[in-house]
Each structure stands twice: as structure tokens, then as C-alpha cells.
Image (cartoon, rainbow, N blue to C red; front, side):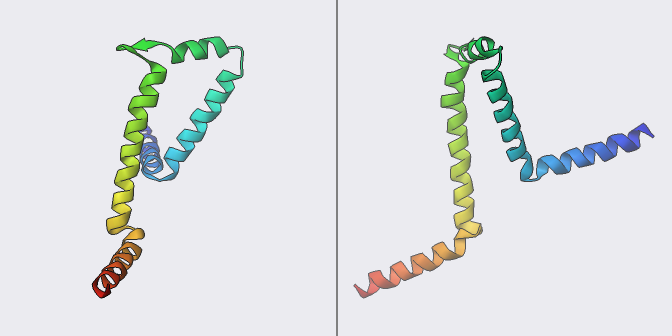
Amino acid sequence: MLDFYHNKLSNSFERFFNSEKSSSIALIFCTVVALLLANSSLNDNYLALWHYQLLGLTLEQWVNDGLMAIFFLLIGLELERELYVGELATSTINALHKFELVKQKG
């Protein structure tokens, strides 16, 4: 009986995290938690957390430098995918063909 609920919960959990909504829900949740912590009596502890040293850099520097680089890498990969096989592929190909025609005439 317990295995049935475990499998059902695991399947629901897996479907949720494979959906596109999961990342936006996680982002909204983290934003709300950060706002609550920053505006509560735990403000000093929250700010101290961001200035915690980890491998020579503060946690704030790790987020600003490391995670933002990964974020923009993923944005670039997603844009490249859209240009080659996504919704932007047909409009990009059409624009390139028109550019080639104009180039050949001139």
C-alpha cells in the first residue's frame, strides 16, 4: 500500500519538475522567502549569510559571478535552439533568404 502512494507521489513530483512551471514557481517562492527574511527581525543574519566567505569569495560574489554566467550561458543556448529548430527558425531563414536576394541584386 505504501509503495502505491510512493510511486504515485514520485510520478507527480517528476511530472511537476519536468514541466516549465516548476522553475517559475521555485523562483517566485525563493523571491518571497528572500523578501520576508530581508524585512524581518532576521535581517542581520540574512545579510551576514550573503557575506559568508566560501573559497575566497563571498556568497554574494559567487551568485553574481558564477551563477549569472551559467544563467546567461543557458539563455544563449536556448536562443540558439530557438533559432535552429524553434519558433524563430522559419522567420530567421526567411530573413536570411531575403538578405541574400538583396545582396545578389546589389
